[in-house]
Length: 465
Image (cartoon, rainbow, N blue to C red; front, side, top):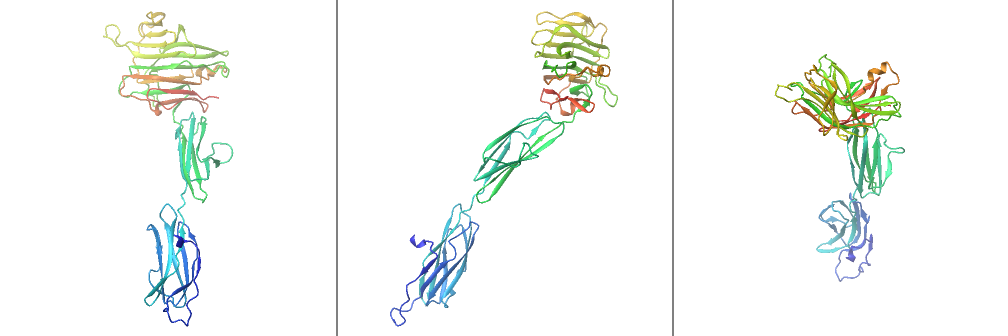
C-alpha cells in the first residue's frame, strides 16, 4: 500500500532523448498533484492535475468504498497540450468511518497506455452528534405541591446545560451541569396553576447540539366554595343514601398559632341546600370536635340531627390527639316490628375501645368494646329521621357563626387530616370525583382545601395564614 501515500506531488525522470529512435515514443508523466489530502464527511471536490508528455488522451480512475458517492468524467479526454486537470467530487460519506479514496490518471498515445502514480484522499468519518435524554419523576403536582426529580443523560457531548422556564432555582437559567445527573426540588403550595418547561441540552466539540424537554404542571382543582365546610359531598339523584362511614386520626392542633380556635371532623347524611333552593334532607352527623382553649387542645365526640336536635356531646368519651377514629351513620336493618326506619350514629375511638352511639327513638350514650351501649346520656324518644340524598366527609370550621360575636374565636390550624376507608350505602356504584370537593373560603381567602380524591380516601389541608 505504499503507493497510496498521500503525497500531493510527483516528478518523473527526464524523458528519453529526442535523438533516440529506440524504444518508440511513449506517454509519460512529468508531474502529478492532488489539491487536498482530505474532505469532510459531508463531501467535497478534489482537483487532480497532471503534467504529461507525448500524450494525446487522459482519463481519471477512482477506486473507493461502494457506499461513497463519487462523481467525475468517466471517459478519455484530450490532454495533448501537456496538462490535464479533472475535478472529482467525493461524498457524502454514508459509512461510520473514514474512507480512503485512490486516484490515478491513465495516459494514452495511440495504443500505448501508461498511468500516473496513485494518490489518495481521505473522506472523513461522519461526526456523531450528541444524544440526550431528560425524564421527570412526575408531570403533574397538586396544589399542595410536592417533590419532583429531573434525570438527564447524554452521549458524545462535551458540554451540557439545563434550563427552567420560568426559573425554578436561584441564579442563572440555563445553568451548566454535568452531562449525566439529577436535579431534585420540592415545589411549594400554590393557589394558582403553574407550568414549568425544563430543557436539557448537550453539545459536542464539533458544535453539534441536541435538546430534550419535559414539562411539569401544578394543578389547582376547582372546588365548591363554602364558609365552613371542606371535604367531599356526594349526591345521590336516584335513591336515598342508607349508610356512610370512614376513618381518620385526631390531629394535633397548632394551639400556639391559634390559641382559641376549633375544627371538627365528621361524616353524615343530608344537610345540603343547593343554590336552586333544593335540599338533601336534614343533617344526621357524628364525629370529633377539636378545639384550642387558651392555648390547650380539647377533643370531644358528638352527634347531631340538624335542625331538629342541636349538637350533643358524649360526656364519658375521652379523646386524645393521635387516636384513630372510625365513624358511621346508617339505617338499621330490621323486620319493621321494632327497628324498621331507625337510624344510628356511631363514633368509635379505636385506641380506647370506647364508642359514642345514638339510635333514633331510643337515646344516646357511650359503649365499650366489652359492654353494650348505655343510653344514660340522653333520650331520643320521638326523634325520627327520614334520610337524605347526600353523604359528607367534612372538616368544619364549627366556630364560624361565633366569629360574628366573638372576635377571638378562629379556625384552628389542624395541619393535614386524611379521611380513609370511605364507604357509601344505598348507591352503587359510586366514587369520589374532584367536582364533589368543597373548600372553606372566608373573605376571599382559602382556609381549608381537600386533595384530589383517591379510590376511597382524600386528605384535607389547612391553608389559612
